[in-house]
Length: 112
Length: 111
Image (cartoon, each protein chain N blue to C red):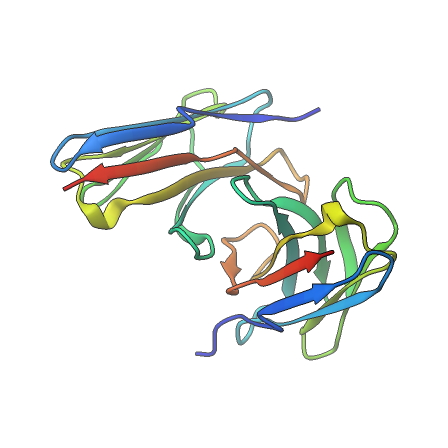
């Protein structure tokens, strides 16, 4: 059974740039959720994708967008990066949407 | 809005002492999940409770879900250094797809 994998593991971007983070869900899981975790804080829900459609969204601006592909892998795109976007971005898969979350190791994004 | 409060924020214990973290929701939850995050790691699912008054045990860990499904607790008996990490509770309110997270309790264990 393949777990959740995320890429890249670390990323440094400049304010105003755009970034794409990728996630492969655990085998058989059709739901992917994205979270932002600032240092010393709990995970903040960005959005969830279920069968290629957005299935719920947290309090994040539209410059945070995503996609889910037919194989249930997912992307998180962030436009016009701000310094406060620096955080650990976690992807978690589940089956079904209300079930337990299986997290990847995360992508550490630093915006300078 | 919907909130989940978790206390204490930090707990420092001697190895062998017990530890408890409490989770309180402003609204009734359909389920409560507990996760553990080691320093530098990602959250790892521990357990899910769905029934009012439910109690589940995993070795030295005991999880409870309150009768009103608004609160929960995690109790660790005789802590070990391997228990170090941040423990998060998270729950769904009704059919809301958004999982509401507590801020976590960070546990430090002195050997």
